[in-house]
Length: 309
Figure 1 (cartoon, one colour):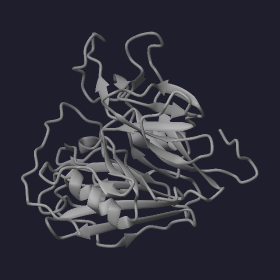
Figure 2 (tube, rainbow, N blue to C red; figure 1 turned 30 degrees about the vertical axis):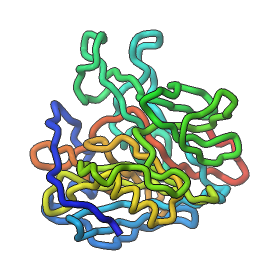
Figure 3 (cartoon, rainbow, N blue to C red; figure 1 turned 180 degrees about the vertical axis):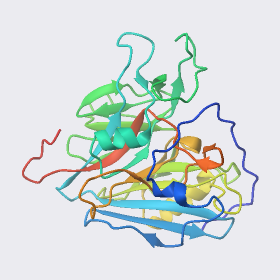
């Protein structure tokens, strides 16, 4: 059960945003209409996705993807936009999430790392959220064993080791990192709730969590900043919710206007990203996707080709 006091959420003013590509169903839903409770999408034996609508302590819409890590036909990957300036100040660039998703042929993904945007003169961090803007990763980013961005003191890492087991914390010098991203703070540490219940700040949220036996992974997105429809969660509420799912360890990833969940249903012949949640960023009153530098996702992997690139 989620226990907290009602709180007024704050909204950051966006400087610029990128409109969602046409054909995405989330744009066809009027802003005042919440997703139906317990909505279930076509899934696979490895992935189950549900959207839940809560009425207390306030309207909240939560999207939950549960992944069976014991399956041999999927892999967990981090997909990052390339470094645009080699030895320059940037380490990545901002790309519309659906583009990253489709180019990597993912099945499921959420946004991951926080980031700083480099200003047009490439000297500071005051740039806008625009497509192909130069940026820096916040914390760990790793793919196929290659470290694209090293862990940082102010961020907590999520990574898969050489055996594909999930971990949350600070990687040691001898840890073998196969895939990795980073977030702001731990929500659950071996089953214990870490956030303070006194923090009543509401935001859209993105989180990653896993079970005690490390065989089940959850990717979760909470919609927010839409009064009367979905007003967001505190970190304590999110930790409680994940604990209720059965999670043992959990990490709060970047949220707010970056929060997004994308999915390519297995019933479709061509895998194309569908936007599962309702992004909180608006353009002309409609939800839009904020470009981001990295996704944490799931990709189908042929069993007879474990080294699928």
